[in-house]
Amino acid sequence: MELSTQKLIHTFGALADLGQEIAGAGDFTEMVRTSMHLLLGTLALRRGAVVECSGPTGPLTCVAVWGLSDQIFNELEIEDAEKQAFLAGEPTELLVKNTPCTNGFLNRHRDKLTAEGIELVFPMVVRGEVTGLVLLGGKASGEEFSSDDFGIVRAMVRHIGVGIHTHRLLEQVAQRAEENRRLYDELRAIYRDTVRAFAAAIDIKDKYTQGHSERVGRYSEIIAREMGWSEEEVEGIQIAGYLHDIGKLIVDRDIINAPYNIDAKLSSDLNRHPAAGYEILAPINHPYADIPLMAKYHHERLDGRGYPDGLTDEQIPLGAKIVSLADSFDAMTTDRPYRRRRSFEDVVRDLRENSGKQFDGKVVAAFARAILKEVKGEIKDRRITKLLGKGYLENERVPTLLTDLITDLEKEVSRKGAKAQSLS
Ligand SMILES: [Fe+2]
Image 1 (cartoon, protein in one colour):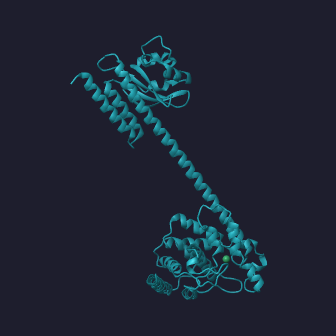
Image 2 (cartoon, rainbow, N blue to C red; image 1 turned 90 degrees about the horizontal axis):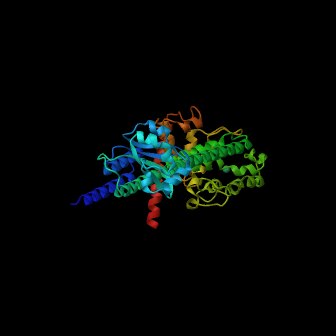
């Protein structure tokens, strides 16, 4: 085989290796270093470096180096006009020793480059712009660079330039994505804080139920998580819990504060609050789905005797069923001026009796499982216990009450499922 053919095959091989190296997902600095070594190896050059422009004008940053002292890179800088000279000049003008020369960069740095043994300075050009330079030492054989050599260098430097450029673009994209993610997180945090401030404002209006909305948000979150909802959905239902009574902001304070002794007219005024809540929440672009509907339907019942629309089981969104249970549970387990809170045994009896009528059995079972996990010490962070206060769940009968409730509800749920299947 002729020497030139062998060289051509070798060059093609090197270009293929270079392409693979640049397209690889490995370490960036290693990619540039290997690419430069492929270039040095192809032409048997003794030294070289890849330097990158840090801006339109100014210092050059070394990305990879072989056989040169670091000193030189502290002193290399390029001006915008000099980049244009690289684009316009003939390849032979890239040889350091050629004088006179129209390339201002070579003229300014000739002595330093010569002292380091640099013989050829090739621009990395991407989309018509000089993005960096490749500095190359002479051939180990002592031969001059041929026009073929210039062609090989041009092709390989182009590959390296595009590789570096692509990497920098990806870095920028990743940085933007990270900034966007941070901004998004900040916005969500602001949204959550605003919602909690609203929840506090709702509860202040009702002097008997301080902290009610906050607790309903927390119970809803715990139930949804127990039911296997995604983190995003869990965050959403927590917000719905905080805001479920926002419609009370338009109900007269005296009506809210006299729920045990109001006539039919006042009662219907109070019962407007779920629909009013929907009106308030619907125009807002919430980061979570269905929040207005969860507020609207949190007083619906499975048997159709709820309000505002008298929906039945399948018509009520699952989120609204969760908020409804959390709401009633908090009402039963907190003191009011006209009554003490109910014992846990009494609450469990109520949940059992009203599952399938007011509450969805699956939702009640999930809540009971979450409480049982805390009671049995299977969960470190005992959030329900903290919300209910010391001692409330510390009755020895509590685990049995919960276990029996869960067993019965799960039996009922599977019986209903089997019945629905036989009908379909
Ligand atoms: Fe309500």
